[in-house]
Length: 154
Image (cartoon, rainbow, N blue to C red; front, side, top):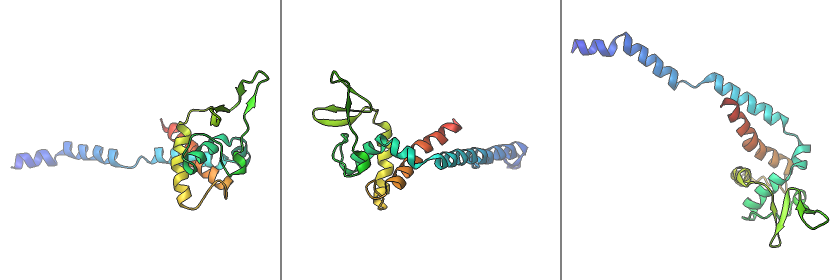
């Protein structure tokens, strides 16, 4: 019994418990870097860019409010996005028409991530129609900025 006790309470077990403590502790440097990068990205969000790059927000709004991928039908004035055509009738730009419906010419992954955030913001009473700048800034903060901060640690 005393032999077993010395094995469990010896210097090796204390070293193992210290290593275990280090692995269980919150990595303060990584957390600080993450919060710093996320804060800098949040401070860099401005209303001019939110208005100029509104396609992401339009796709998110369409998914949450109208449960569709097509962009038409929004009451929000910022989301009246025009489809542009070359002289020969081919569309160019960020949107296109298909079977009479307007779609974003972008991959839907970021729209889907933003839709999750916007869904919860709507539960809190925020919407693009009533609070465009605040809502789009929060969606950007919790999607793009959060991804950038996580990537800074990778």
